[in-house]
Image 1 (cartoon, rainbow over the protein chains, first blue to last red):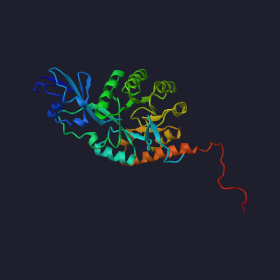
Image 2 (image 1 turned 90 degrees about the vertical axis):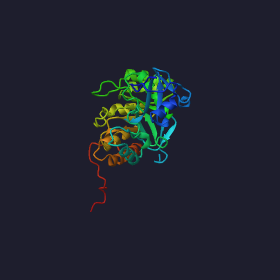
Image 3 (image 1 turned 180 degrees about the vertical axis):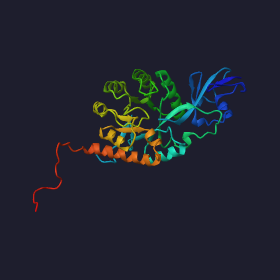
Image 4 (image 1 turned 120 degrees about the vertical axis):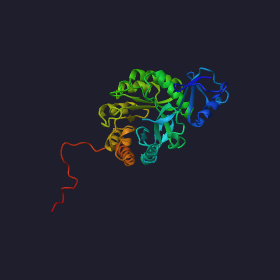
Length: 67
Length: 259
C-alpha cells in the first residue's frame, strides 16, 4: 500500500500494517516521536491497534533544537 | 527574601533558576548540553519538526538533554496561524506529555515581531485545549494585559528582535508590564550579553529566555555561565532595591574629624 509520510510517498508498505509496525520498519524509536494520521493524533497507546489504510497521510515528529 | 526561597513559579511548577535557554543554533547537541549545565537553567525551549526518515540514526536532542531532568518547553516557531500552533503543540504533548508550552506566532521574517492578533487567537485555542501557555509577545502593556486576562501562564515580551542581541530596547514598557502583571514576566529575545540579562532582571522581570546570546558567543559555555550569574545578580539587585539616583556627589568617607 501507499502512504504519504512527512510529505514523501512510500509505496512498498505491507497491507494491514499498524503504527507500531511502521515505526519499527522506519527504525524510529517510539518513545521519542509523535504520530499524526490524517491530521489526527495517534495516541501512543493506540500504536498497536491503529491499522494504516492505503493513502493515509502521516506526520511523524520529534523535538529538535529551537529558541 | 533569601536566595534559596526565591523561586520562579510558572503554572504551579517551581524553579530555582530564572534563566531559560534555547536549544537552537549550537554547533552540536553536545555543546548545547554543556551550555545548559553551565547556565544552570532548568527549562529549555525546543522546536517540533518532522523526523529525518532518510537518516533515523541522526542524533536526537533527547539523547543529549534528558527531558526527565530538564523541562522541555515546546515552541510554535514557524507557525503563522492559531490552528498551526495548536496542531504543533498537540503533537508535542503526545510526544513528550507536557502541557507547558511556548506560543509564538510570528509575522515578517525581517523583524520576527509577533503577530499579536493571531497570537491572541492561538492563546485562546490552546488554553481551551488544556495547555499552560507561556506567550511570546510584543512589549505593549495593553496586549500583555489581554494575554494575562485570557489565562496565559507567563507573559514573555521581547527585549529586542529575536536573534538581534540589541539588549532591552524599551525598558519603560518592560517595567510597565512587570508592574501590572501577576503571572511571571520573562523577557524573551533580544538579550546580547550578560549586562542585558541583568538589566531585564533589575527591571523586575521574573526571568529571561535567551538562545542566540549563548549559542553564538565565541565561547558558548563561558557565556552560559556569565548569563547564569547575570540573572542571579540582576534578581538580587532588584530585590535589594537600588539606591536613589542623585544629581551630585556624596562622599562615602565622613568629612567630620578631618585632621
